[in-house]
Amino acid sequence: MAKVEKITVALSKDTLSAVRDAIASGEYASTGEVVRDALRDWKVKHRLSRIELDEIGDYIARDNPARAISFVEELREHCAAILAAPASYAPREELGAGVRMAVHGRYLVLFRADADVVRIERILHSARRRPRSV
Image 1 (spheres, rainbow, N blue to C red):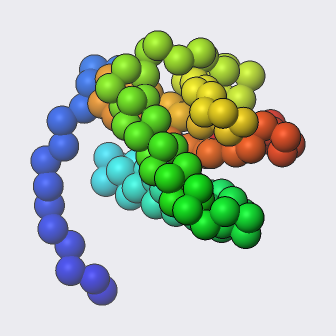
Image 2: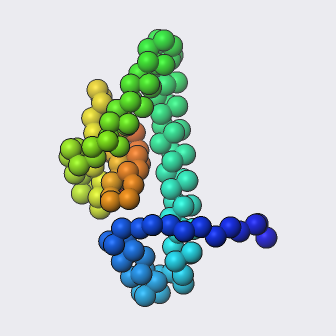
């Protein structure tokens, strides 16, 4: 069995309420189980957005390697701007609860923001089929 270390996590009132509701409903057995599931989900989505960013760079690099580097950097900077002011971007509830969208050129940055964290969920070219949910 892997070594386990206990940590303390501060959650907003709304997030804590959602965790308690999930346990009370029987969906999860403990707060630890909720956190482990959330972290597994985060790791998958984090890898996905990084893979998408790499794919964008690779696609642009076929025609213009220098522009690929600068464009990916611009996208990263735009993501940093999202972190600074997430509420200034349009809500896209039809894609999922709490989803917002930022536009960077022809690319869409789909993210979620709550009191605790901002998560970049997907980075897609606008010509691609949009997911039904994020």
